[in-house]
Image 1 (tube, rainbow, N blue to C red):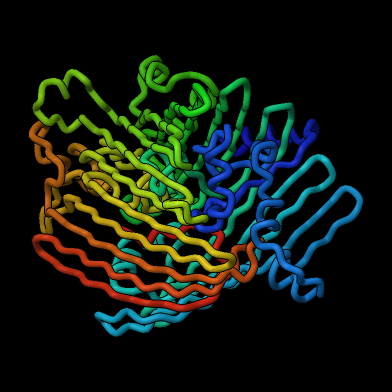
Image 2 (image 1 turned 135 degrees about the vertical axis):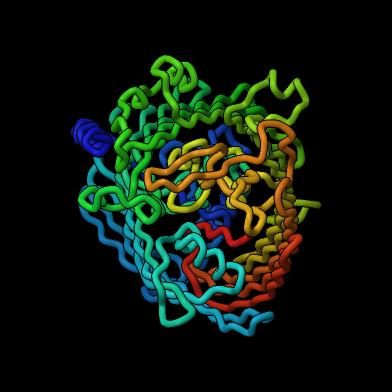
Length: 546
């Protein structure tokens, strides 16, 4: 049903379009070159990826990139290698750009002596057709061997984090692939529609507690409307539960792909003045198929303006509703503060009771970012703190959790954690140095105990029986739920990267990195030191820092 709605809406707007709309990449590294200009402007920067046509009046990203990486290369092969797309096809009313995606790296995990590597081949295609259609597509096929803690996580979740289903490669590696793409169209002034298969990020920090690009790609419809000092975004998403059929074999004839669930989100961003931006977020998730009791696609959630909490009450909905807020405040010295608050089944009265009710499910983020620190051009400093209470993002029915493809939709640590981050970036000409420190603490599951202590968002928050007959034990109690309950686990993570950018158009670079990670819990200790060196097209965020 939702695919039909997407199709008809797409066809409707296709014949009325009059502008081109492609996105900036989500990559934190690739965006460094124009991030300062974006944050200094009036651009609504918190719903990402940013659509180029909505920011071009404030920041000309193409011109800025060419200015920053200016060169005198005139020969064809030098331009292609150092400053242009590999293939550019253009004529009257159309332009298509094609470049390869490459990642060849070798490394070693020192503690176990494992030789790591990654071999990626793929492509990106981006273009405009007349005055009507803009499009983007990418594909990457990968084989890799990862260091110990990533290897363990992949074998547990069956996915290479954020990048696709993990299939065995030889004896110790994984084979995986990721495709993405979308059409961008403009049916009316200040109104943008995108339809495709990708991921999104809401926030002004390194992490997001509202919606991040931590998980795998998903089919989506994005409708963005700008007016006065506001920007309003509707996001409709189809997500997948790749564990469902493994745990619940009901009817083989119904197993058409993975079990589906849907998300409908609204995000209203407002510039209250030249310094303060506030964004209001709400989202609902509901499962729809492969179970006898499913009600099918709920058309109520296509409502582009209804508030989900009163809507849920009006239709007696059991669905998972989250609400949140994002704030950014500009400071002097080329800096700004930012923060988020996420609420999930939150009760103010229960919180006032000071009894640590399990339903006090919330999280918050506070952070600061400064550019040109101590007067040194292109030196950026960012510090951030995140905390999420136990059971946030989880649900009584695990099929309606705030997760997709075996990963949380917000923070990679799930819930029941706190995290401190420090990130330093320095760029000079084509050289980039990046240092990251992360200290995290969370309450994990206790080995041999089926009780959920609030970290794993795929565990039920209460006693719940799957269609297969499997029963989730749920939480240990209704009250007395405290931070880090379960098995206390500490993570210390440090990373240094030094890179030389060969081609800024695709963020193609030579990169050397060394990472040190120590995990200590009450029952285990995992130490990791690994280094790698390689050449890569760096356009997508890969969150290995958990």
